[in-house]
Picture 1 (spheres, rainbow, N blue to C red):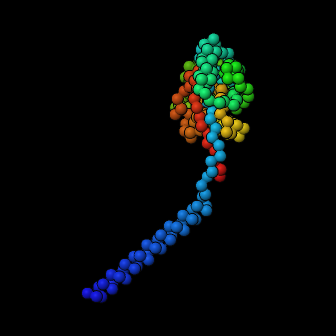
Picture 2: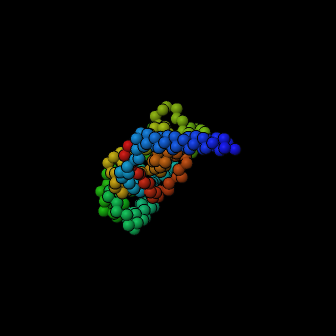
Picture 3: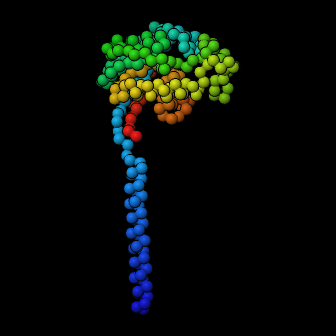
Length: 227
């Protein structure tokens, strides 16, 4: 019986040694991981209030508006004035307005600027999708001829592709982040491009982002961390 007890003691010691070595290995692993992947440091938080321009004459004509200047309708101006009032009553301390340089967006941005008493900075990266030589074509006709399996495919290559506008949206966000980090800004842009901005930010397809109505306001938060 005594020999059995001695055997049990040896087994318990071995188990204890193995457990100690395992704990030591875990500690070393945590130390190595910490040295290779140190925790990131929070740097900034940037708030972007994205506004689609108001209704335009071209919206009502149901054409591929693209890089056309666009003319706000009376209703379009009222829509933007309503959005401006919404922003003014939010109590948010906006620092500036950044707008697409297309006229319909600039006119919308100026209406908001008049209410918020803020400067407007144009940024051509915020333009709507470029439809190339097909700009001005009725949407129904273009869709019947060139929209297949959820994608636009134009024969002459003049129109901006999905991947092109996605890359431009990512560049626009990076440009805004670089220039205006730590600020809260209003961005006035276009319906389709706004969806690409949110898609680039969220890492999803723009098709997963609900369409924006004229003068609709949506908020985006950009967080920055050190490497």
